[in-house]
Length: 454
Image (cartoon, rainbow, N blue to C red; front, side, top):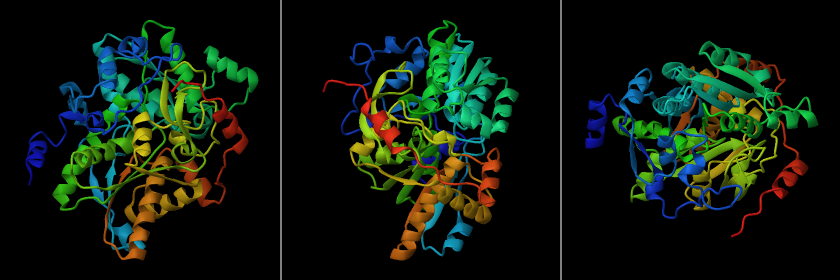
């Protein structure tokens, strides 16, 4: 047992620091830019949206950032999350590979999202903030922020993408149970929402639009801050407790992953699992294949352009360099609502450009097929988002079978699908179909990318 293992066991196996991959990057990422001046952002530029502690984490290059004890105390409700070996799935596939998964569905909200919602709410509460506005797709982030707000006495307003608001009523009920107010987006409550509805009263919404609404509320109310559940550096950093725990648990199991897999929409659960392993590699450790998996109907890493773009549809956010489908792109209404975002986290995008990670994309029905296979073998029904990681893990295991290789595969089962059974019902009855994005709409969205001097 290594010193690292002993340290975490002594401290109830919950890390005391978040890992910041910025400290180990061979090349720094491009800086975010002010949308008006096109100059690099400074901390003061973000002050209307975030408390200063989170802003300093966003720009930090320190390898380790301490986790406040009150946050660790909340984490004890469900952390460390279990690492499990999918032996029954291995048997079904007849593969020599070993398949492990880190299960984040044990959190109160049923996904990895409270790993960052709790610290974000705590830092806001420490700064005297009483109200937070945010957005959500499938509802995992919204319910996590609602849970965290309830813990620290913060009123939470959530703008949920309309198609997911309609598809997932029980996620909305969970948010309301925790005390949040949830609005379908686009809504008539903001200038950005009204502008969209004026053009199309039946617009299905997108995460880009919901972000615009939440940012607008925060920017126009002095007593309200904004919270984001993915994409930003500090959010990805908060999730690294997943990978840190997994490193210790893999060591305890006597194995070391050759392939690490996570689904990707904005990039937070993928980064949370993979960044600590990748950081070890960047410091001279074992080289691994790290695979980001996205929906083929919203393929920012595999079809998007690496360029500066807005994070929202109304262009209220800073410009960040990322893989993007264009801020005006509206994905079709497939069920993995948490993956329906036009852009990828700048850090994840940067790693893809450096050749340190791979990306692949799968259709909705292929992912549900994998999810059903996993559920029947392992007993856990994955969220539609997590099904993408399950699908990729199965594909890697079958590759190992074909090649006669006994590799170790680790993936992040980022949440359960208990609020998504309508989607499973549609799949099992043959009603769930693959939805393709409009190539013309994609071309139009990409043609409208902002012009940024080199």
